[in-house]
Image 1 (cartoon, protein in one colour):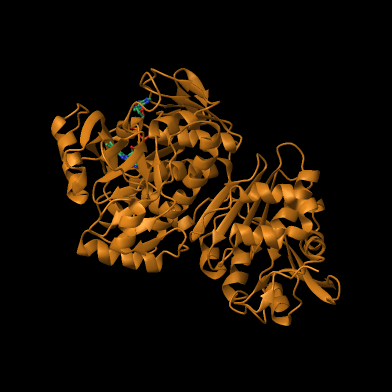
Image 2 (cartoon, helix red, strand yellow; image 1 turned 30 degrees about the vertical axis):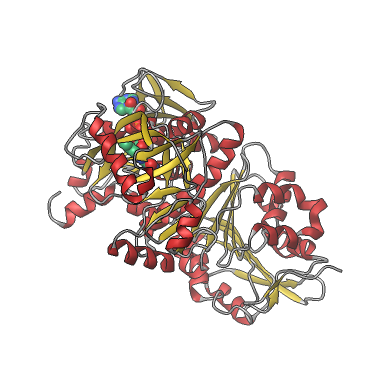
Length: 605
Ligand SMILES: Cc1cc2nc3c(=O)[nH]c(=O)nc-3n(C[C@H](O)[C@H](O)[C@H](O)COP(=O)(O)OP(=O)(O)OC[C@H]3O[C@@H](n4cnc5c(N)ncnc54)[C@H](O)[C@@H]3O)c2cc1C
């Protein structure tokens, strides 16, 4: 007989190795009247407490795939404070390999890095999984589910072993998020759980539990629900074919929405995104906060998506690790606070001393470092091409969307919505003059390196990364005062001097072979602009309306590889009425309207 998967922290097993899958089906599927309950519904949303091995998700996937009709979608959202690693999950579910082996491997292929926060996984064209690696009590208030929750799977360890989870915050979250016809199923029959569910208006029934368990709870509630109105968006014009535009198109396509990209240049990535290589790293803040969570989710998502894309075409994805050198007292304070506060598993983020940093990087270094083993380099130009695969692209089309009927007209064609992803094109755009955005010119330098190379990306204010074949990239300069993209030889010199100051052995070993200059777009508070475009006049009059159907993903600064992809998914969420891929506080912190709110506070609107 197999040993049950045991959790020491809660002194409890996850499920019985003999009949865990049958128990899941009895408690959570039958208990929520599934698959019957999703019949005839275009969208169905399940929220679960305690993802564990994903057994409940896999059982739901099997049932959904067997019964769903074309176009029906399932959102499965699950909280897990202590995520298991892939091997433990695989081992734990070994007993049911014949039944759920295929969906299990499919799920594990996209299982997120163990990084605290929200993780949106596109499991299939019809099923999205959102894993939230966090305490349910802290994360539940951050959920935004416009259509409401249809079914709750209250799993997790028993109330006697894990009393913290079965809290008032959990039940008030259920109250807030439940849709018009919502159901709950849970394995427990604890009296206080029954009372708490009844207190939020659910009709509770005690039914037969599984196997030797005498009772469990199911509950139903019919209640008016203020669903956010989601118009059926089918066609979207994307204005600009850089990272922001192509990643937005990529996300929309995965949500079944047809985008068309309009690009002013003769090729995709003709703006800042045309660099041959760049690093993908989050923005580092000492505290874990809404904004840093945006980048943490983006980091894990980009890692998953780039792994998938690289498997079918070369995007120059090289997760070689990034060594962020602690080369100032300020960084020492910030990085060590971050390491404590961000809640990343040590497999993905740790502080290494000088010797270990040198050892891993393969060059003598003078500083300790914050090491991200999953970080690395990618070619933004190739990434844009990969995102835009199978998407209509109109080149040499410098366009401005015009309001037309209920939608937007672009290049003589009508669309339900338009997304401004035109990089520096948003600076002083008509109607957007109020946006506090500016350009920052920069240049990267590609060199050949003779002599011993190095293994990981190095970040020290500037950055350098090995590209293979004796080549490396180093960058990049920052010039707020210039807005041209002419190549400046002194910028190459600057980039080379900076890396040689960190790795003196590179002196006289570097020869410039290529370079590229571009314009980043930065906002006043350094966070990007993602969401609906506010109508300035309406805000002035106090109505606070947006330009209906007009969205923006811009201001990605020096972190566009990560922030543009997350921005694309957030816009796809909004356009399709899907649960937000990130916390609603994170979405608010990148929403362009934040700048109007600040103006209003200062009486300057
Ligand atoms: C030197 C340098 C180094 C960098 N290094 C890194 C790095 O290592 N890691 C990282 O994450 N980020 C890095 N960045 C930042 C990153 O490149 C940007 O954040 C990102 O490319 C921005 O993408 P975008 O799509 O918003 O803008 P862009 O790439 O500029 O795309 C905007 C596109 O819109 C088009 N356009 C403009 N107006 C119109 C119009 N009216 N109609 C149609 N099309 C229009 C433009 O032609 C352009 O192709 C770097 C930037 C620079 C300049």
